[in-house]
Structure formats: C-alpha cells, structure tokens
Image (cartoon, rainbow, N blue to C red; front, side):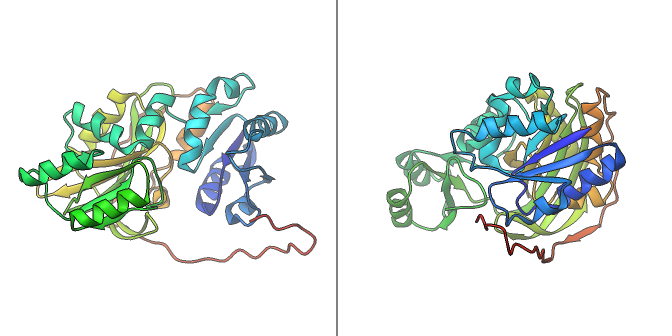
Length: 327
C-alpha cells in the first residue's frame, strides 16, 4: 500500500508515523513546492511540484498517483483541501482515495463565518461572529458583545492577519487595509484542541483526543496536556457524525465556566496531532485499515490524562551543492 502526503512542509512527524505504521508493507511519498521542506526527506520518495495555484498542478499530482500506484492521498494545508475534495472522482478513477470530507463541508470549514452559522444552526455553543461591521456596532450598543474582539479573515489559516482590537477606530483601519474580514467574539476562557477521526466507511467517530493548549506559536499548539471530558466527547461525536465528516479533523475549543464552545473546524491533521499519536491515539493505522476496506471500531478517550507535549526545534541538513534550491 502506498500513501501520498501533499504539501508535507515541516510536518515530519506525520510522515514518520505513516512510515512506521506501513512498515515493509508500503511506501510514503511526499510532495512540496519547495525542496527546503524538511518533511519530504523523511519520505520514501519526494516529488518537487508546482504551487497549488499553477494550472498544471492537479495533473502533476494525478500523474504521481499513477506512477507510484498510490492508494490514499491527503494534504496538510488548508488551501489544498478544497481542491482534493472537489476533484475526488478523478483520484478515485485512478485508484487513489482522497482522505478528506465532502467538498461542501471543506468549504464550510474554510469559511469561518459559514462555520459559525453551521454551529449556531445545530445549537452548538460558539463565539458570536459578524461580517457586517455596522451590525457589530449595533450589537455593541445593545450590550450583546463587548471589546476586545478579534478581527480576522473570513477565509484564512496559520493565524495570518488576526488582530485583537479594542476600539471602533481599530476596526475601521483593519477593514480598510484587508478585504473579507469578520469580527469574532473574544473567548475569555481556556483553549483546547481535539484530534478526531471519522471512519471513512462507517461514518462513525472512532478516535477522539483532547488536549488543553498551554502555549501557542504561529497558530499551532506548542505545549499541551492531555485531558478527558465525557460531555465534550459526546458533543464532538454528535457534531462530526451529524455533519457527515470523513477522515481526520482538528477542532479548536474553548471552555468558559462549565460550558464548552466549539470554534474552528479544520478537516485535516492539526499541528498538535503528534501529542495524540504519542498517547496511543493512532489515526494513521485507522487510515490504512480504511484504505484496505476494513471498518475501525470506536475507541473514544482511550488514553491517559496529564501527558504533556512540548515541541522543540530540530534541524535537517541536506547537501544541495549540485541542486537548484526552490524556495
């Protein structure tokens, strides 16, 4: 069995985990638009590809799938998820299964205001959001929301152009500088993250790992500690199964008082997933079983509380004396 990881970037651990689970039974192939992406050197085979915005990008990926006899494919970056979901049938036609939720769900997750609308419609607690700043100003006057608030892109990732603001004047400046912004309620509570797997055959949530985020860096969890909460487990299971998610999902959560609030939903591996794997929540093995046509049995919350993850810097050194460096 061969697996293709798109836009591997710096996600070395994900490549390592799939190689470990495959053992001698298959190969991990990785792509990136730069040969300075350290994770690609962990793979059995690396392909330098165009940027995802290039007109020939998809054809190149499909070509790699055919050449390497790829059984399953997934991406590690948000902008590529919609492409993979939208073109799912083209991958299936050549025997490569995209490990991704439906195109409609992926698009909803990438649009943070649509995510807010979905959660609100389902009656799931979440922070208030506004795309019309005048509507927000009126809500402030009515006492429905208060400063500070976050101003962020409706569609974005990696915490780019996210600002905490404390006044109307700051909002006006930001809305002038950047297009397609939204205003989001500042969630003054403890932040958590969930790594979730929804079986691609049964549609049931089979794995769920929750960690309290102790420290963040560039939008990713840098330090965290494992926790369990049956109420939160139940809330997440019901949400992902009702919506019809598929594969791996990363969910941002807040706890304010005794209440859980879902925030952002990312239908991919989260940056903090290594914490889950090292605690025994083995999503790669479930992916591989699904690709073999086998159903995974639910195993929710099967890990120990109080286990901490601490990321630290590592260095990859590669001899490129006679190789063009693609940044």
